[in-house]
Amino acid sequence: MTRRFCDGPALLVAMGAAVDNIQRHVDELNALNVFPVPDGDTGSNMLATVRAAHEEGRRAADPAADRVAAAISFGALMGARGNSGVITSQIFRGIAEGLAGRRRFNALDLANAFRLGADRAYEAVATPVEGTMLTVARAVANDAVAAAERSNDMDVVLAAAALGAERAVAQTPSLLPILREAGVVDAGGQGVYRLLQGVTQALVQGATVAEAVLPAPRPSVLVAHADEGFGYETMFLVQAREGELLDVDAIRVRLEAMGESVLVAGDRKAAKIHVHSEKPDEILSYGLTLGVLSRIVVENMDDQARDILERRALEFTGGGQPSGSSPAAWPPPQIRQPSGAGQATPRNGMRPALEIIAVAAGDGLAKVFESFGSTSVVRGGQSANPSTGELLAAVVGSSADALLLLPNNPNVVLAARQVAALADRAVHVVPTRNAAEGVAALVALDPVADAATNAQEMTRAALAIQSIQVTEAVRDAKIGGRRVRKGETIALDPDEGLVAAAPDAHAAVMAAIESLRPGFELVTIYYGADADLAETEALAGAIAARHAELEVEVVRGGQPHYRYLISAE
Image (cartoon, rainbow, N blue to C red; front, side):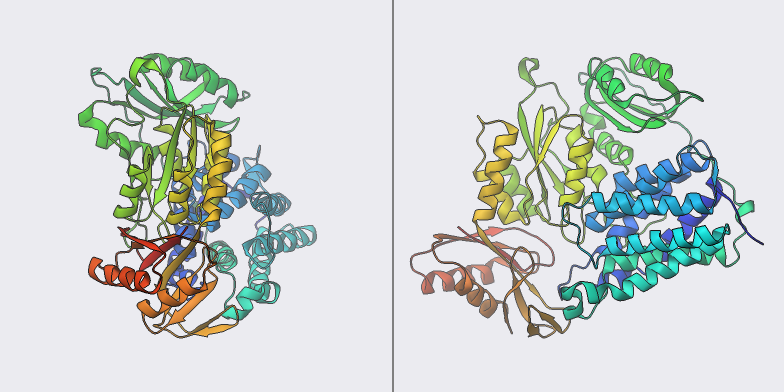
């Protein structure tokens, strides 16, 4: 039977099937790493992103297709992890835009939604590169449009989109030399194919979409306590009434006059609200003038409730662990803040002009960033990228007028920039590629200068140092024309270019130091979870013995996967 329309419940069935298929292939996607390092995380990032999207879609109060699509888009945005997750969230954003105003949609609507999804994905990347998941998203859109113009059967369009994705993935090595050299297809592109494969398997091959039932939204929660000093944290979802639209900017301005730490994230149909105030009843009363409220949470912000607040903030922004997920498949980073940061009103009622949020992959690195003045440290790094929502929660928890955000990983930069676009105040991203660059950036901080000036100077300082990441090859591979063997220690530059390779870590590091541009005076070795102090001190001694002009420092980093992170400045 020809299926000519799809509705919100069917969209949820499709989304659930997509999540299940990514789950089945998460190891496959993680293994499609260009570099033979033990930190492939594309599959994990995409899985976390689509899970968050599905969970949010399930909570949609209205089963109309556009409301479900909007909820999926918002969940993907808040749950996006890594560059692949952020790009996936932008694909969902375009799809939601394409389905706006439709309680159900047809084949042409779907094809147009895919087209907008590809457009938004390309727009999210400053310099789009062909041979990546962007290319696959565009192929999906083109093949879906061609199919929809020939047939009004939804199954035909979905099958064409999936086939287009599969073909485009197979072509990625011919478009991107680094893939061809590594002998792999693009992991993100393969993830897009697996998403569509799951949908087609569930819908095209026999699922009874008409019998799907929209799961009931979770019940609202209202918790109130007496004010003990910090006021109340109030959160809720507001949906515009029939025939009305929300003005997100006007809502934000009004709430800023009523409280602190205001976050308004959403669109003209639905928005999530977060605010700290002394009078939550006034916040809720104002919310009722805007539309229909749901998922209401009010928490007293005293010391005893602080752990609850951190969990609520993660749940609000989509960072909480989805139900039914395992810790191994979904490791949520944690937000660490100094006592009282971002909650209590600063002395004399004055908000600090500037605060710093840094991402750190290990306990040692977190302490380093705190010692250098980071107000908040978001835990996470390679293979455990923090979500957009978790970064946004750290912004919400700050009382500063402006913030500097140090991602310290190239796979966190896109999520950081998403936060800058969503935040209710100025957030400047300093695009640091590792923790060593992050420390160099913090050293350059000028407490007198404004945020924009600091961001420029800190970026310059971060790029001025040389850094090396040392790990072990997990497979035979070819990097930059040079072959490495499984088990060899490899030293990589910040862009993962091969600097040195040797049978053991000591030899690899010494060779890497020799390859650096001359002129540096200080070498800092941050040793990771797989190294110990004794061997690191021995390595530092060997470097100092060979280069008497250098000062060598040892710092515990605790980072996973990378035995050493080394900076030269």
